[in-house]
Image (cartoon, rainbow, N blue to C red; front, side, top):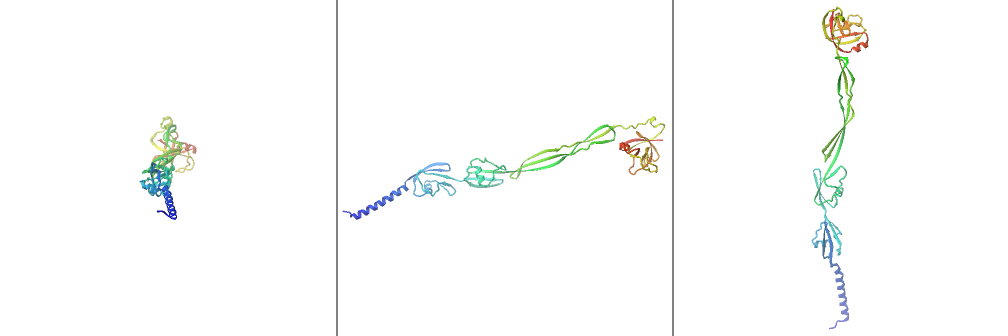
Length: 324
């Protein structure tokens, strides 16, 4: 049976169209070899691919979630010899004080992760891992915040009182050589707090001014209270009395109305009667002629010729002798 020429031409065109379609699709359905790096693990996958990269990986058991990073994108057409990298996010727990937070991150190092979270990595922050350490999945990072506070106080240093003996003064007398000056000390206290809790305290003391001791001289020279027949002549001792004796310069009038002059003393009449005579070692014979509001009990006030003599006498405890 012969095929008409017109029909033969139509059949040939149809066959050519089928051949072109099969040839074009053969490249699409050809065998592909793909190298996959999944979380750092390398594997080579071979197979046919009819759709995109995501379908190709799923067909060969490679699981990819929406949180993973894939390069090139899953929508890419599969090409033989291509390299695919899959990166899974790391699970990291961040501990700050008593609080814990969980994060997912692709940060490669501890420092990168902290910077992503807006946590400063300066001197006030301490981290449980080195900042340059690689970040691992499931890692727990402790963040410790350290702060310091400093206070300065100034306190006085009390001076010492030193008493030293001298025979330049009579017993019972004393004089201040140096008054004494308080010292000053600066106290600096530095406290270090970790997450608000005190962990270290440092105290530094600096002497700003040294104290100066107070020095007092105390008399050791004995008083000459002994009497002799030569010193009092033919006077008779009636009694002796220990008194506290002060001195005042001549001038003014006594309680009896006579001018106050050397050789007289002011007394308490209830202890020493007015008009009586007394011998005072170092002074001689004096008479009780005056009184005073401050002269009470065993106390006398001796009239001296000058103010300088009165000041030199000062305040003394002496034994006096009543004579006649």
